[in-house]
Image (cartoon, one colour):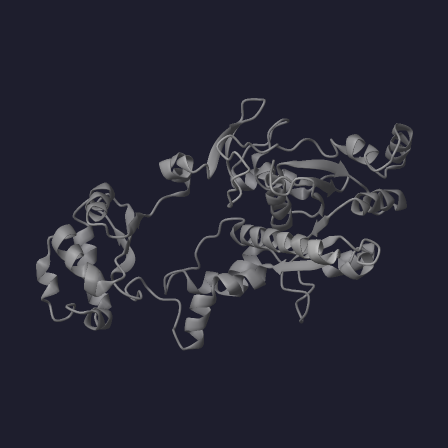
Length: 402
């Protein structure tokens, strides 16, 4: 039993951020109904873009963002389909959507349209660029509103090189967990006031929050992008080992940790006497030269060998792991951050659990309920809001439901 047991959520959304928010709420125990068009959420077809399989029984890419839900297909262009949707909203605690403001206006599903009709409803809206300003209605994906507009693409790749390659979902997932937190706060607010609330969270908004440290540095004149020869300090930088793998060294307290690093790890006590590097200020002034010295040192041993030495000296560091390493990482597995899943047809994949643990959930054995076909829960869900089998048959015949 999760902490959101008995909370009912209706989702009208596609792609990643809003559906993932609803999936997190489902992981936490909420009863989530995903409303799709009769042809289904377009993300059901996106597996090949991630090199993921799609079979009759297995759709890992879609399930990654949509597990744990019930699936209803409605034609919201029809009066009958919209009536069914409003019956769902009438029983809901939370409405999650990522439709753009003009689309919500056209369907009469804005917060202003719903707040008086359903005064206890939490209206949760994922936005690209916010609800005001010249770009409020601009289409936004995490590639654009999050990665591009926030400065990540232009400023985090090494200076002089191309922008870094992107992976789907980073901004979306940050928005999803932020909005889930906002929804929980709004639900608590409702316990004290009896009233619903509007909660919105945008991709550009989350980018500003996550990147406030470099944004603030830029405000004070720090120039980005930069090369790895211009880190904050040489003791906090990436280094390549003899086997081609990398390490991030984080011996940030230079005056205290450099003696251990140079003596116990590098076997280079002479660096402590070098006037270019013998105190923090000198090492920062000459950081490019010190990086080059460290480069040559790290090339003498493998990643495993350096990790063993750094671990023994109790100096913070980490391997530069690859995405493929995470599903077998013993620390990830020990904490149930990810698990391997086998579908009914034998297709295997890996899923990540929602990034918060609760004492009331057995995370070691928790497994998400994967998705079914488009509209697979139509009859059960719609009968729950008062439709008879005969009425459902008539709605299906009229093309109002799937």
